[in-house]
Length: 239
Image (cartoon, rainbow, N blue to C red; front, side):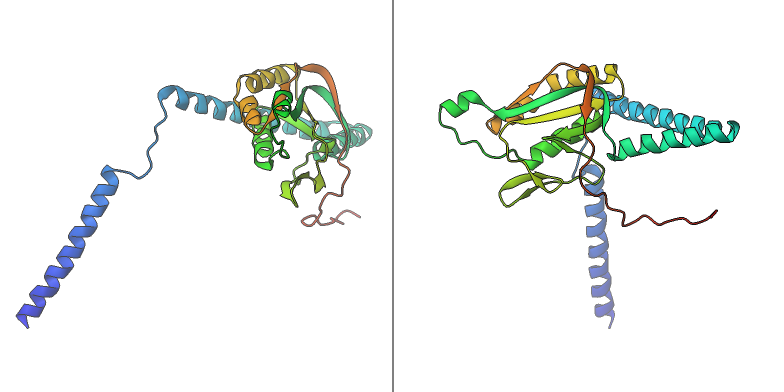
């Protein structure tokens, strides 16, 4: 009996010791380490601060609109409400929009075509990466090959073709329009894209990416499809 108790205590002690050793090793040697240097961390912090500042600016604009609603006369409130609705429609993609921005051109690399390289359709992954970086660096509205991007847009690879809003990109040459909030934002976006590795990434896929200089006015068309309203409900209060 005594022997069984000693055996059980030994086994339990071994298990506890093993767990402590594993825990200690995990603390001392974490599986993932942040290998970024101080400069990279400062850059990331700067991006987050810029995002925070942008959010505060948007909150301030909304508060100003609320203040105008509360202080203006009934006729002015109606006009302000109409302008707000039109602005929301532009943001949702239901209206055309014009403003400062830049145009990108994607086409097969001519020198590679001459040497007989096969040109594949543009990769959805590469296009999504580019779109995400454009939004990250203050690109506000985007149109690709005539297709307006909205919050519900999808870029997918279907039946051997890259599609945007379920519409296949059939042309080898693609024009991409981008509108920013201000001309200064458009210049910053141009500088970032020009200095980035995206042109090399496109060249690896046998494509050429041309980044044109910013323009004072670019026009993007409205979204041609039907926006989903699955999560919207009609509010009849006040009728």
